[in-house]
Length: 170
Image (cartoon, rainbow, N blue to C red; front, side, top):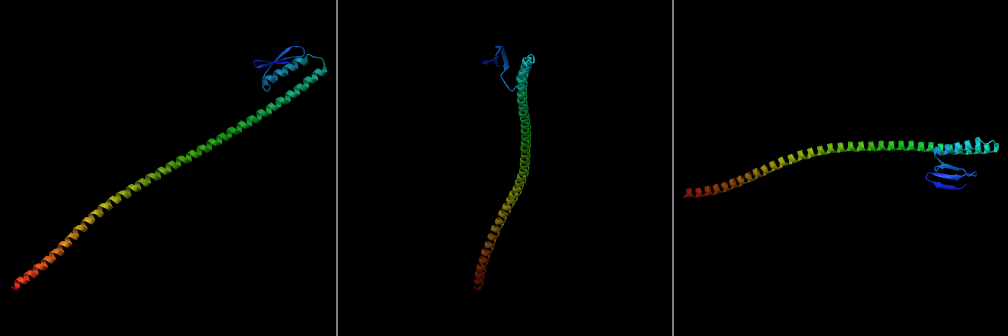
């Protein structure tokens, strides 16, 4: 047999010089059906029992090949299902994580608002305490000045009294 490549098909020249066109993909179902039909048509018209035995062997090889393809397809399907399930679990984990992050954002925003309110109250209290402290310092300064004046007046009055008592003595 001599292969010659033609677009998508391989041409084989059979011993009888008949050209057989076959699909290029040996695993496609059309390829297997084509081969099966070819073997059945070639050897069913033959009266030789040996030809039928060859056909039987080819069919069993093809059946074995077909079964291995089915097994591979089943594995592929199981793997696809497994991958889909894994992706679904991954999406669920991601969604749970996202939900947890959003709840943490809400909790932290609430906590932040509470802290801001507390800071504002403390700031207002500080302002009122500073005003009161300033007022008390002013009052203390006024009282000190008054005490100084009173002491000064007392000293002056003592001097005055002593002067008057000296003057009275005269």
